Image 1: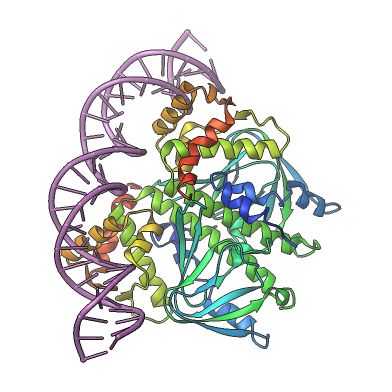
Image 2: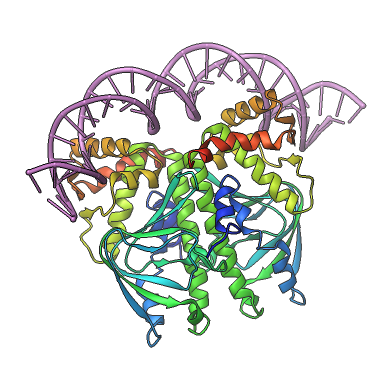
Length: 238
Length: 238
DNA sequence: CGGCTATTTGATCGATTTCAAGAACAGTGG
DNA sequence: CCACTGTTCTTGAAATCGATCAAATAGCCG
C-alpha cells in the first residue's frame, strides 16, 4: 500500500508543487555526466539561453543562476512557465522536435552545462532519467495549474514564496531569505495575476508581520502563519 | 531538415494547443508495438483506468474511447488536466515514481492496450519516442496554460471546441460534429471556468448561429466565425 | 415510475483587473 | 561621481468579468 511519503505528501504540499519530487536529487544528473564531454557556458543577466524556434542542439543543466522559461503567442500574449534553479534541466520540452519550444532567459549571472543531444544516447542510464525528469516537469505543471485554478490571489503568492523557499533550502540556502530574481510582473504572470495584485498581496503579508520586504529580498518571519493562509482550503477535507 | 510547419504552426494555432504536434502520428507507437506482448483491456464509462497513488505497472495506449485525467488536492480541489483520445498514452506523467500521479477515468466505453513497464526498455526506439511524447505533453500543457491565462471565457470555450474538432478530425471523424463525452463541469474545470460560464458561452455561440447544440453533440456551423472570436487577440500583433 | 445528475437561465456580488499617478531604483554615459 | 532615463514598484479609485446563489427544467438510469 501507499504510505504518506510520496503522493500524499505531494498533495498535502500542493501549494508547493515540487515538494513530492525530492527524490529527484539535483546532483543525480551531474553524477551521470562524470567523464562526459560537457561544455560550460557562462551567462549574464537578461541573456537568453535559447529562444522559441531556434534549432535545439543540446540540453542545458543549470549549474548556477536563475532562468525564466516562457511561451508566447504571436500576438504578444506570454506565459511564464517556470523559474529554474541549480540542478534543473533546460530544453527538455523540445525533445523530439529539433527546435526549442520556449524562451529561456537568465535572470542573473549563471553557469550552464551543455549536454549535446548527440551524446544523450551514449550516456548509460540517462534515457531513463530524462524520462523521469520530463515526467516530473509534467507533474509540476499540473500542480501549479491546480494551485492557480483553485486558490485566491493571496494564497497563490504565499504558495509561490513557500515553494521558492523550499527549493532554495534544498540547495543549501537559508529558508528564511528568499531573493526574488524576477520582477513582480514575472511572478504575476506565472501565477496568472496582475503585477499590482502581487504587490498588494505582498504588502498585506508584510503588514501582517508574516514577511519582510526589502526590494527583491523577502524575509519569511512566520512560516506557520503563511502555511495557515493555505490551510483553509485544506481544512475543507475534514 | 525541419521546416517552419512545426513551431510556427504551433504558435499560430495557439488557441488549439496540440496543432503543432501533428508529426506525432497516433499510430506511430502502435507500429512500434508490433510483435510485443500487449494485453487489451476493455473499459466502461465512469470506470477508472488508474487512480493517484496506485502502483504503476504499465503505460496504457488508448485505442478507443475518451479518458479524462485529473489531479486533486486532499481537500477536494480538483483540476482536469486533459481529455485523452485514441492514440494518446496514459501514465506517462508517473514514469520514474512507481506510482500513478493522477486519476484517469473513462468517459465512455473504450479499449486500452497495456504496455508493461518492464517491456519499455526492450522495445527498440521506444525510449526516444517516450521522451518525445512526454515533451509533447509538456508543450500541450504550456499552451493551455497560456490560453487559460490570457483569453476570455468565451474565447477559451471556442479554443476548446476548435481543438477538440481538430483532434477528432485527425482521427477520421467529421470536423463539424463534436461529441462531448464530458460534462459542462468537466469542460469548465479544464478551462478554469464555472460550469455556468461554459453554458453561457455555448448558449451565446448558438444564439449567434456559430454552433448548434444538441445536448452533448455540438455542430460547428461557422468555423471561420469561431476562429474570428480568437482573432482579436491575434490581431494585436499587427 | 422515481430519484439523481446534468443543464439552463436569471440576478446579484465581489475579487481581481484596469486605469492612473507618483516614488524609488538601476543602469548608462558624460 | 553624478545627472539622466527608463524600468520597476507602490498605492488609490473605479470598473468589470466571471463567480456565486437560486431555481426550474430536462435527461438518464435503475
